[in-house]
Each structure stands twice: as structure tokens, then as C-alpha cells.
Image (cartoon, rainbow over all chains, first blue to last red; front, side, top):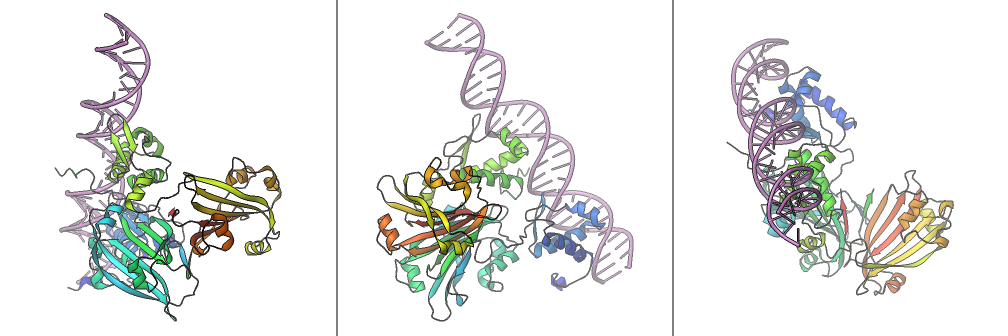
Length: 241
Length: 241
DNA sequence: CCATCATACTTGTCTGTACCTGTACTTTTC
DNA sequence: GAAAAGTACAGGTACAGACAAGTATGATGG
């Protein structure tokens, strides 16, 4: 039952050495986001090592979130220098009030939402629901409320039990081998519903900025659906193009 | 005898990539409802892939309900942006580029705006000001109001005299050799000021979506600064990434 | 005018080949 | 004994080609 401790050890063998070379090529941009790596057999010839060694290197790179590999096709760079879809999404949410916000998790559980599944074209209607609210640290003013829905899949079924890794949903999903790649976003302004208003402590009908994002993996699989309600007196969205 | 059951799930790679390109063309309206897609062989040539790959892409699009294909004839778009959007509740009646809207020019003249020049880091504070308002063609509901400011430069000094080319500012600027390349955008929600409220015929204080864009040429020169106020009951902003 | 035919398209289905990753196992090396 | 190398096979992906079957069109002949 020793399990050889996964691989967290530094271990300075050949696999690690090769992984470091490839990692350098990726981080330096020599291998750009979306590029296909050489096939395992090509890497075997390039480094004059066995295929099992190459595979260890690649699996290490995958663990670090730099690449994903698809059977029958190859490995692809999933690392983007300027993190595309990080926590705030591609649009930086500029907090006018400064960084004095506290985040509170309202719930983290498995829910069934057939309507959303239908909209996203999913077969299963099971999601992991993560609702969070952010308030001003000092005066407690509501800043934003965020509903995150992650389609249920085997890799993350323990999420509601184990909780988030480092408090970050993105880190947790990356751990599970899910890398955001592309998506869509809608932005509009809507009056606050009764439920959300109650949660956030505003009067119903107050206009809030709403962003809805669908984030997909490189394979086109829906990875996350996020609805954010942003207090317009605290938030502006910003993007460069 | 496994037979792999037709189309379990597209992994990743060419079929998905091509499906995404076509899906984008469909969702953007470039391929409208009822349009016929290119034949499979044309797509083979267009994307330089084999026919089986093209067919996987098409079957994936069919699975998503975007197209249907008839043997001996071809594939047709069955996705109607409006209908689906409404049914799915994604967007409220999205005003599609000029669909049922009339645009009225409020003013087109040369103005001086030192504050704006300061913000944009320009030496001259002279701008061409183009203010336009859009209303619903049928019921006259206000849709949006748009303040455009173009830094004064020799190429366009006759603009206020000659007017717009084909009624399009973009076409006019392109005519003058100015091509938009990159920029920044801020999005927030603000209460309508008294002046704009008067123009647009709403009560002051009504919350509107506001977008502010700075568009630059490839050389980094500021080409245009636009402030748009969008009626949130008519507009949602959409973006793919 | 009308029916029929040939032709040129379309999609549907099937083969075979080449290459890819996934996995299990044995052998060699240090 | 652990790490690496080597071997073998299974399963997935994509390409290329061939053929069948459905559809539209125009030419032909009555």
C-alpha cells in the first residue's frame, strides 16, 4: 500500500528532466497554446529514451496543467501565458471599492437542473452547484453574487465532500484535468429577483449587472456555467481586444 | 463487433475544431436559418481534411440541433437565433444589428473636449462628434444612444461637411485609411443623466447599460472613443472567447 | 406537352492503412 | 531492488478510396 507517493517528490530522474525541457518550451512560448506536441514515438527518438519514460514526462506535464492528451490524436498545449479564464473570467471585474471584499460560500452541493441541462445540450441534468457571495469587508455592502454550475462527471463527484482546493474552483477543476479553453459570455442588466435580493440584502428590483458565462474544454465539453450578479455601484467590467 | 455506436463523443481534434468554426458561422448569423451548408466535399477541400472528419463535424452539429441533413441534397441550418434564444431564455429580444431599429443622427460636428483628450493622452482636444440614437422601428421605444468621438486629423476633416459614407461611420473611417485593430472596453450600469434621458425619452435615473470603448489603429493611435448607453430591456452584450 | 433517360451532383456506408495513445508485461541496467 | 528500456497488443483517430443510393437537372424522343 505504499503507493510510491504519487509523484510529488522532486525525483531527478530522466522523466523529470525531459518534463522540464518541455515545460520550458511551453512557458517560453516556443510551444504556444493549442499547439500539438511531438508524438510519443517522436519524443522517444528525440530524447533517446523509452516510451514509458516519455509517458511519465507527459503525465507530469498534464498534472501541472500544461498539456492535455487525447487518445488516438496526441498531446496539446493547454497552458496560456495570460490565463484566459481565471476566477474573474476573461473580463476583469474591476472593483471600484478596492480589494476589501470577503467571499462567503453559500452552498456547495449536487443539484438537478433540467432546464439548464437542456439549454446547454447536456444529457444529464445533475450539476455541482457552487453559490458564493462577496461583500464589502468593512461596511458589509453586497458586491456580487455568483452561481456556478458544473456538469456532473466522475472526475469531480467528490467535490462537494472534499471541498475546494485552496478555496479556488479553478484550481480544483484543473486538478481534475479540466482545463478551460473557450466559451461565450452574455452581459446585461437585470432587476434583482426576490431570492437573490434576499440573499444579498438589497431591495428586489434593484438593477444589477449580470454576466453569464459558458466555459468549455478544448473538446467542446461544457465545463462550467456561471451567472454573476454584480452591484453596479461596485463593479465595472473591463476587457481588451 | 463493437461497432463503436456511431457517435459516442467527439474527443478533441479536427472534427471538433471544424464543428466549432461552423457553429460560430451559424450562431453569428453568417449562415442564416434555412441556408444550405457547403457540400461535404467542398468542406473537405475548404478545411483540407478527409470526408469522414467533415462528416463527424456535421453529425456533431446535428446533435446540437443546429443543422439537419438530407441524403442527396445536403445540410441545412435549422437554428434560428431568435427563436432559440428566446425559448432558451438566454437573451431577451436581442436587437440584431439594425433589424427593427431606426438610427437617427443627433449631431455631427467638430467639438473641443479637453477632458477627453487628457484621458486619451492626445495633444489636440479637437474631435469630430457623432451622436446617434436608435429607436425601435415599430413602437418607437428607445434602444440606445451613442456618443462617438473621433480625434481630429487631416484625413477626416471634411467628414462633418461631407457626411457619412453609406451612413456608416466604420465605412467612412475605412475610406480614410483608418482600420480598427485593438482596443479596450469598459462595461457598467449607470443611471441615465438628465440630458440623455431627455433625448431618449426615458425618466432620468433609469438604469442603462453603458459601454465605453477606445479603438486604436494597428499603430496604437486612438481612432475612436465611443460611449454607448443601452436600454437593458433591449440589449445584451455577447462575446465569444 | 410530357414521360423518360443520362448525368452530375448529393449523402450514406463500407473497406483498408497509417499513426496515435493506453495498458500490460518482460527484460535490461545500474 | 528500483528505474529505465523494450515488446506486444488493444482501442481510438484520421485519411483515402470505392461503391451504393437519393435527388435535381437538362436533353431526348414520343
